[in-house]
Length: 446
Image (cartoon, rainbow, N blue to C red):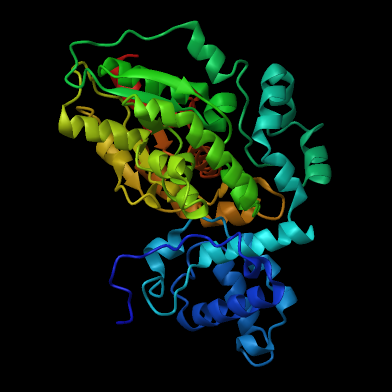
């Protein structure tokens, strides 16, 4: 095996049901093996904060090597991983099939699963990520919920930091007054029977973010597809489990995978494609679920039918062509290629989609925004995340485009906050468009 891992990386199923998976001693041996390889390589120094924390820990030890580092000091390294997969996919020369067989993100996942078992996980973050409990309540009192979570609220935000460990200045997602399901039921777009792609059928998985926080992204996806002749249905059985994966709760993710894939099976059997507007969720359905439940036939079926929303539109444009009627978007667009988009190995589909819009200036940024899901809003992580994303904020400010979008809406919100710090804030109309599919809808006049 040549060093450099020139072969395509291979990801192994996660053996979370095996007894050894949560064996503390065996996990420590594997952590030390991996950390020693990382210490000797250091190619990942400029990704997330896990690696600087690891390298500092080793460098400041008595011997300058891992042998003098106490395992009790590993927790900050484990906690800093955002499971973005960028080290595995873009940096590490030792991923499988290399004989070192290194998968840093899934090793951190294993360590978090042990933390969960031992009760040492971040309970504040765990409560924050219970979207199917928090979402219905927050949408029913959206005015109050949004007031309480608003940055600058001197009454509630210091309290949230003190009690919930949520950083007082972190931008938190606002809640919709109506769920996506309710909004979708109020009106149905007409299918364009003259579109080149007429005859396609797609079921849109709304995701918890689309259901409770940003139905407009899901509805824009439905509108664009209808304009292009695609018959659509919007469904939301429950959250995909990415927030629980971040907490190491693999068993709950497995349950969600089985439930949602069983719900989607009849649609797929009727010839529907599955379109997902949020990149983290499409990543889960495509790649993480099959690694957690590799023998489940419904999970396999679903993973082969899933498209990220931008991926689906670009594929349709290449195969059949798009419906006419696209106009230029004034002011230009900056497209952020999120980590969970890159982890899908589908190419820069946000860029390809935006280039379909005539007369529209497009700038592309392909670096981490520093958000990391629930990780980025916690008191201990927020400023670290803003530092990680500083290069993105700088480049977005330099581009000076009116719109900044990302296939990860949370990453886009992080960039919007970063632009404020660069004295280049977005106006309210621009801030309302988070996702590339919304820009395409704007170009269609929808």
